[in-house]
Length: 206
Image (spheres, rainbow, N blue to C red):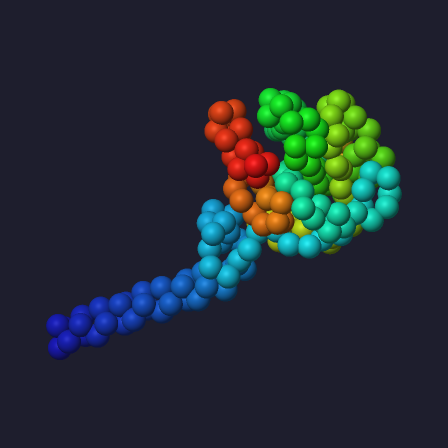
């Protein structure tokens, strides 16, 4: 009898483990496609990019249709960022100069992930610091979140008592590259060298 009770107990434990595994698998499948694409941009059923409308530094609507036929890169950041954002924008300006095709070689888009503080005027003043044409975009929090999602970019607010207004922003740091047809081509990561980045940019510039 003791052996029989032990077998039944083991059977119940095994069934419990199976149930837990099934619940975990179901939760995994329920995750939005764009979350998968953070680490797997080429995952089936998801295309990075797409049409959008945000607000330019002049306060007027900026539509992605104005980019038709032009290669461009997109970087999501915010003006209160202490290092990654200014370093990335400065690097993009430098790489564009090194291509030797002028400021029209490709368009640099800066989309703020902090629209609460980054008004059109704030973004415009910030981008003037880089001494090169950069398209700055902001919008409502919902608009920015939607564009970030469509570009497989993660963002989130982080409490920080030492920061202005008591918070800072966490976000994906990659630069997204798009060809003249508006299709996603590749990314430039922080850790990649300039030679690798230039090769990728030549692919979209032609």
